[in-house]
Image (cartoon, rainbow, N blue to C red; front, side, top):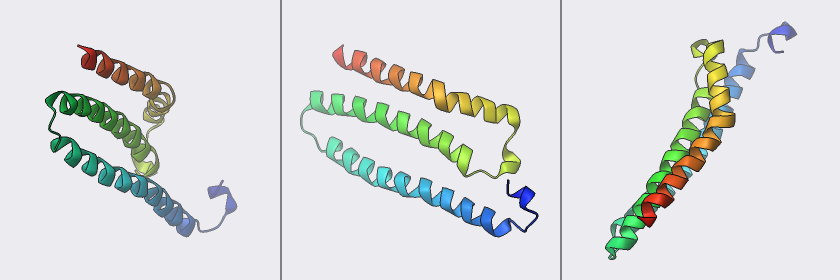
Length: 116
């Protein structure tokens, strides 16, 4: 749509890029700080069983969030010159379908591991 406007779109593209980066970095920064606090809390736990359960829950959640934001980072932050149509199709399918299936699988395996 921008290319059809017959105007210089470099300013708009730069602003959109900055907006996408900001919208990803703010939540990632908040997650990093909160995960660091959780990590310190779990490290100082006295109960070995409680620490084991907390590590399992923590690690599975970090894995799911990392996959989620990794795909979002690829989609929104990388320049369009790095994108290929086939890769974008795979990323789109991964983001809409496989991400939710993997999330359920990771949490289910964590629960099975905790119960054993």
